[in-house]
Amino acid sequence: MKAFITVIGDDKIGIIHGVTSILKKNNVNVLDINQTLLQDYFAMMMLVDLKEMSLGFKELKQELQMAGNEIGVTIKIQHEDIFNTMHTV
Amino acid sequence: MVNFQNIMETIKMIEEEKLDIRTITMGISLLDCCDSSGEKSRIKIYDKITSYAEKLVKVGEDIEMEYGIPIINKRISVTPMALIAQTSADNNYVEFAKILDKAAETVGVNFIGGFSALVHKGYSKGDKILIDSIPEALAVTERICSSVNVGCTKSGINMDAVRDMGQTIKKTAYLTRERDSIGCAKLVVFANAVEDNPFMAGAFHGVGEGECVINLGISGPGVVKSALEKVRGEKFDVIADTIKKTAFKITRAGQLVATEASNRLNVPFGIVDLSLAPTPAVGDSVARILEEMGLETCGTHGTTAALALLNDAVKKGGIMASSHVGGLSGAFIPISEDEGMIEAVRNGALNLEKLEAMTCVCSVGLDMVAIPGDTPDSTIAAIIADEAAIGVINNKTTGVRIIPVHGKSLGDEVEFGGLLGRAPIMSVNKFSSYDFVHRGGRIPAPVHSFKN
Image (tube, rainbow over all chains, first blue to last red; front, side, top):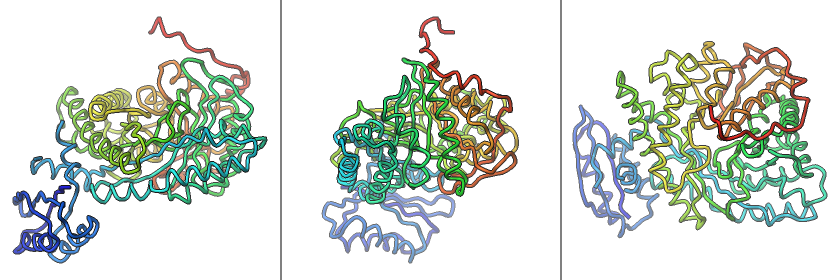
């Protein structure tokens, strides 16, 4: 299963590190990263592979949310299909 | 891979524009639960519902978590109860309502639909008993939704049933008078009722349906409104195209969730209902979409045309996005459940007559309309007859969910709470329809040639 992680919030140092360290710890492979600054907002999306993940989806989601709270950004993880189906015919 | 903008668009739809899946509804056939003993029949009903729907809520919550799209309601619809209960010798079906309520509570769904009877041509023994049981059934239960089909294009309108439903609605309003007659909010009188509607209060599992099925109702008025804000001043061609594209995306999300729920529950996928279902929350209103098209307020002249365009474009966009479309599929225009509709009634722009005209071009009918508590039952029956005639002649579904709020009159407002919202009392015509309604008999089926 693949999922998109999206990070939105004020730009600051260490956002990518904060997210990827959780992914590394839980054996989640990053397939693609794209980031941009929308006005002053930091926006990043990451396509990740959850095949070898060492914990459940729910737990990973909670860890990411907690990390987001610490850093001060919003972190979401959603199954890739929600985006694929809505935007492709 | 989808691009950055698309991902941000989906997230914005969910976060800011209130995109959600309104309901996953499991339809369950109870045809094998008939028994000459009412008690035994009820045990079969309870056991069947609680075993089939055991995982419904859990699966809904899992999908919500993994896909990040809210699924507001998980619900159940069952075979019209009059068909099941009439095998028994019982002469009152309130106990059947209670067992449905209990089963719904056990599996954790907030509504169960199908305390219903199909009487568009006439009453069988059990149909009459069920209709007589509706007021008490809705007063003593929490989660039961009831519907009665009184007309259909192929058979005309059963005016005996129309008259009886006027009285049933009044009794229900009286028995639930302590809670602003809320029982009537769970009772729909249909013409051309559909068998696979996932939305309450009109959902039931039709006799032509399979053993068990997953139907899904989408939502998303806020997303359509927001898309139209970006094309202000453009011609209607652009408006129609924008709505179609938006409806496509919304419906695709619905189809995905329905397919996933169907796989996880190991229950066949039935249909996606394309209805734009509003809520009382700001930013989730169908009326505001119509206003976005250039109307000062919903209810003014032009509203019917705007709604016709919206309803048609939603269907055109949605049909391509789903493998099976069904249910009511169109824009819902309830009063109490739509913040913009409430406002339109409050400021005097929208009255019952205009609302009736709007129902000619959309998918439901007079929905969640509060009227004075002293409205005669014959007037309510006549309102039902008018609405049924629109459905029967135009070959479409229409429904009436009207609440004569006990003790309330013009100028008052009633608060139902939650998704049912709040409603200003609307005025009804003061002149009598008594003699008309009390003729009884049937209005014949219409001819479907010589269309004009």
